Image (cartoon, rainbow, N blue to C red; front, side):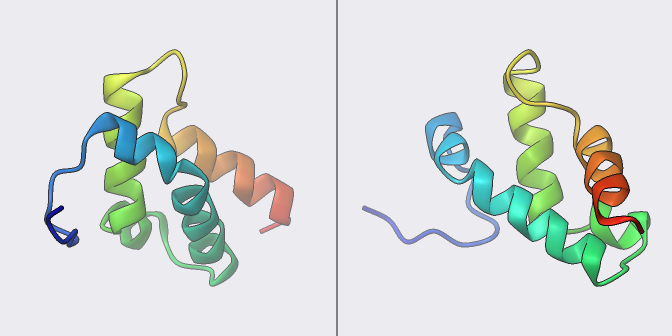
Amino acid sequence: MSQLTFTTDLTIAELETSFSIYCKALRILVLEERTINQIRRSVCWRRLSSLHEALPYRYGDPSHLYFLIKRECGK
């Protein structure tokens, strides 16, 4: 098995396995009060976007997730 890096293209199955981790990372970025532009440059955003593009009916748009988390956190 090859070593994973931030630049490695992951399979959809690997992305799905880590979905909750990417959501948690997005939540942390929101809690840290990062701007949407900073968050859009993050690894978790790219991975969430990849999932949404591959399986749009199963995984929401990262922008929608961002606003849901932001509303939930009261930020």
